[in-house]
Image (tube, rainbow, N blue to C red; front, side, top):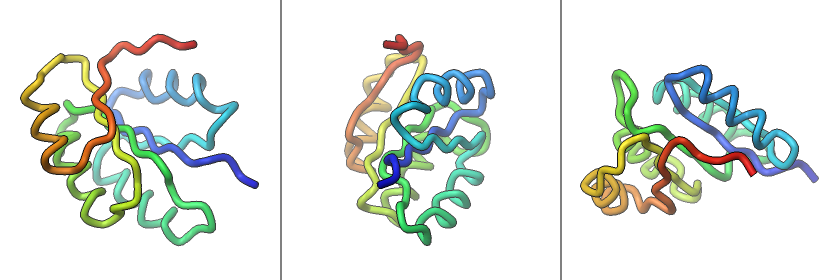
Length: 114
């Protein structure tokens, strides 16, 4: 049986690398630097035997915010669990995302590796 797939979306390569290193032993980690890249990856993975189970997106990215990206994920892949990650504790963003996309968790950066 294969490991569950997690897709982490962040425009900062250092964050993508740190996340992948933190979780590669327990999960199959996929990364994308933009919402558009992540949506293309989700479409490809949806055709596989083990599609993406969890999407974690940074909120502040160029071209498409995390909320906007997760809204598209929710529309096209409603069974995928969605989490929003931000370096800013903006309660309005959290409320907006919960209401628009059925957000599972709102996380703040930096996270602590355990």
